[in-house]
Amino acid sequence: MLTKQNISFPNFLEDEFTYEWHMSRNERYAFIKLLEKTRPKVAIEIGCFKGGSLEILSKFSEKVYSIDIDPKVKENLHEKFDNVDIRIGPSSELIPKILKEIDKKGEVLEFVLIDGEHTVNGVKNDITHFLNYIPKRNVHIVFHDSFNPLCRKGIKKANYNSSPYVHYVELDFISGVFNPGKLYRQMWGGLALVLLKPEKRRGSIKINECQKKIFNTVYWKSIHPLRDRLIFLKPLVKKLIK
Ligand SMILES: C[S@@+](CC[C@H](N)C(=O)[O-])C[C@H]1O[C@@H](n2cnc3c(N)ncnc32)[C@H](O)[C@@H]1O
Image (tube, rainbow, N blue to C red; front, top):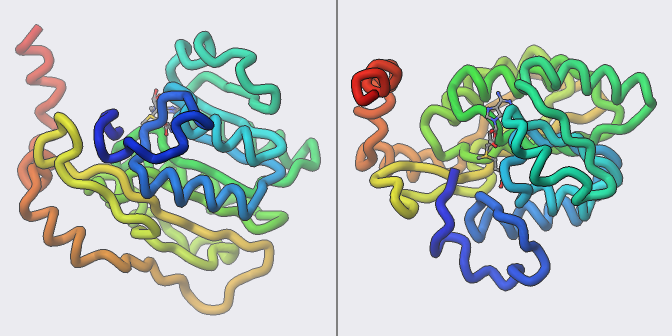
């Protein structure tokens, strides 16, 4: 959800990774490093769009399942990556199926990017599928747009204590951006990180927000306190404009 402007360019990676990628410069560096370190056997991506993050996932993973609700994604990216299986449909339907398939085939999930439906319930439902999953190895789950108040609320709403395999939750693994491009006084970007381990946790899990003060300070200068309360009017406004 970031516009293509100075928050990501230059990053000195332009020649290597050429697909349109909706992440800021610092997010790109962190995302690449995390994948370079973890080198997942299997990764899942929710929200493929133009293939930017998928290009990185494909480079560092043995196999990637990439999900998007928009059929155009498959038309545009079909056969562009040898190790990628693109599935079209809502993540709410596809994720449970893919997780079952992974277990049935004896594959090992080690990485997830959640960057699909940017609503409170969309984000919460996406992570909840993985809280019901029994990890075979460490699974790094990265959310994009944890700095956006609605996405952040969705990430926070999930019941991490329901899974004994959650060992770490940090909403501000990488901080987000304010006022990017034409998104006037909006808060976007940021990477959250959840770590699942195959062994069970002792005690309850804490949701870390190491940059909570930045989030709160920017929030009250942003458009979100007003906009997010009126979001239920959006369909009505759209109808009136038509
Ligand atoms: C912000 S873009 C993803 C950007 C991409 N990860 C990147 O870094 O360049 C979000 C994508 O999620 C898809 N999407 C939205 N809701 C979805 C859902 N419920 N299930 C699957 N995909 C969804 C949209 O069609 C869109 O392509």
